[in-house]
Length: 168
Image (tube, rainbow, N blue to C red; front, side):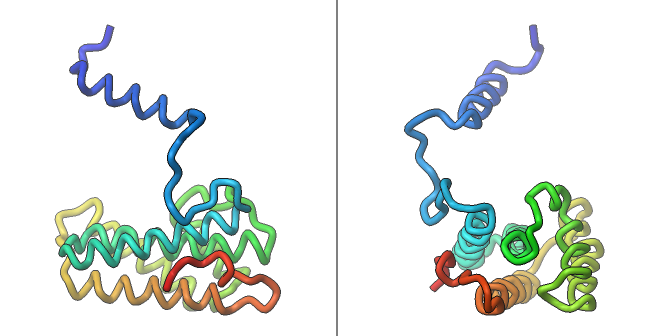
């Protein structure tokens, strides 16, 4: 028997039950659970950007920085799955997406390396160390994530990402 508090173990059990995707589950709006991998990743990026907008207005700057990185990763993953035939399993850590983008596009090798360095050198400071995010950092990160997402949505001539994008 566990020595953990019952409310903690009960909460854990609720999560594991929910992760089994019980019938009748309420899915996140604007993310099609029956969609293709690239569609779902792009829609997740859209939702992360929408959450960033809301959280920025509420001055949750650290959360904006975290989610902006997530939105950039989902946007790049969507492109590489659709255009290059990548698999979701190719992106099992946060830097894999930037490494793959450096060799396979859709952005330049230099930009992919810059994004990877930004993640490695700055994101970890705010996540693991005692650095505190600012409004200026959050605004700049959100702008970068929006620009990358917009580029992905409009870049491909062979795939219509704008059909899946729910950003306004």
